[in-house]
Amino acid sequence: MMNQNDITHTDNGAYYDRRPSFVFRLVPQGALHTGLWESGTWNQVQAVRNTDRLVETLLDLKSGEAVLDAGCGTGSTAVYLAERHNVHITGITLAEKLVGVCRIFANRSKAAKRLKFALADYTATDFADNSFDKVYALESQSYAPDKTAFLKEAFRVLKPGGKLVVVEYFKRSDNLDTEAKSAYDRMVAGLHMHSLVTAKTYQKQLADAGFGTVEMVDKTTKVLPSGFSWTMYGLCTLPVFRLAELIGVIEKDGMVRQASGCAAMYPAFRHAVDYMSVTAVKPAK
Image 1 (tube, rainbow, N blue to C red):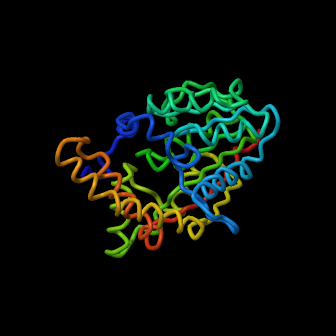
Image 2 (tube, rainbow, N blue to C red; image 1 turned 120 degrees about the vertical axis):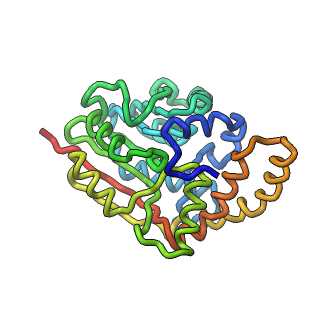
């Protein structure tokens, strides 16, 4: 299995492009992100929607705002936000196949005219300076080898006074014990992420990029049930995928690798990985 430090940013686009499009339309709400189990949550569909609501609350959207979804996945969160708020959302991803999935979901939406999806690298976009009122990244920055490049680009495209919202995985410590490091390595490499940073390191990266008014909130306990569900999925499907890979039905280093990463999610959340929300503001001039 490829080491996470060897993964390039463009590798991640290719990773998703190798998946059949229908797979992305089978997951809860069409979403690729982790669900938050708030009080009263009964299933994974509700949990995934809770994560969308968290992003919605943190963004505090105002009518007419321009919003960038940096690493938009299937576009499910962008569609959810655009249907509930009179905002214009541009979603970008490195996976061409995901752009197609995003457009399918958008075309079915009553907010289709305010949604746009494109193939682009969120660390080096063609957007003009000060283009967006809000930028958000939902579990997408973990795929970037250079986190600082994303933060600098987000700062550049945000208008003065604009807000960045990040909901993401963070490494709990740079000095994990053997058990924790094993879970961390299996999850990160299996899910094709790049190395994660600690919350402390990320705070410094935000400050170095120019952001102020930073707030980070730990949500790890609320994703433990989702982590458990993904671990059960990984453990149950891993033997099937291994057999399918062995007889040549599926590609090597694909679904087996992903299932291995999923199987490690619960122990990783218990011992090595934090799930946090982050808000940061570009100072007004």
